[in-house]
Length: 313
Figure 1: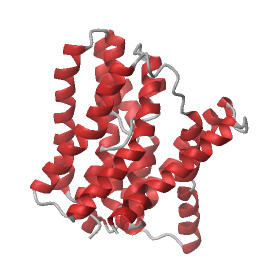
Figure 2 (figure 1 turned 180 degrees about the horizontal axis):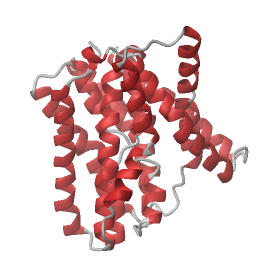
Figure 3 (figure 1 turned 90 degrees about the horizontal axis):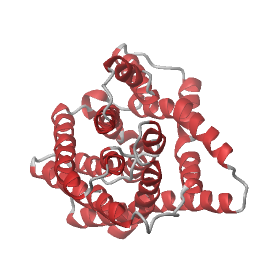
Figure 4 (figure 1 turned 180 degrees about the vertical axis):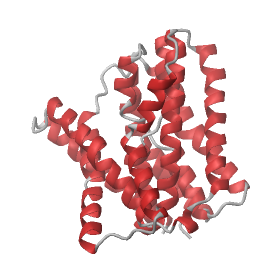
């Protein structure tokens, strides 16, 4: 049972990404197509996914302020740890910026939600959706501040706030919360349409992610990649899971904490690094390597936690 739980959570991700890699190798997907599809998924489909997850959720049952605040505190704790440790070992500011962003930003929608849904079902993924709605903008804000400080530019609060408001994930979450707050229920045909668009995200986005993985230059950055992967895929989820469990939260909360903390670096960290003076090549390598290794690490986390009886009960 424990083995099957791990396989059911990770195998679909692996198959989709492998399919994307095969299509790219067969030259059936170009870089231009991948970029266009990624923009469509992020700007159009992601809001429907987050909206649908929250819309289908009983907010009173899923909303757990104590859990959300704990997740925020743990995120800030991990950020503080890497801000103390990494600068002592890596002197280059562009390299440091990409490494710090690599730990701070997570590909939550593509990895965390599929893992939670695979184990609990769509109707019990509300806590994960609400957590993503909180953690994604927080991680974006922290990343931008870190990168701005490292390149020596003055922070523009207005631009920062505008980017948060315009984020499609935040827009989808706010729309869903507004609809739920007003007690609005859509006709069945509208609900089906929203669900259909939301269902496009996971398979298409994971296929494009698999197609975009490039492992060149991995050896050159092996020291930096090793540090980020250990912190991102092992230390961070260990901190999150142990604290959430020690505080007495239930299995859904433990699963959500693991899923949100053990996922790879956000794909968007690459263009962000390129635009803000960090090491873009390293940023791309961090996305590729954490995405590849996370398939194994997430599988092991699910297997371990289910064997302990902390999730899947």
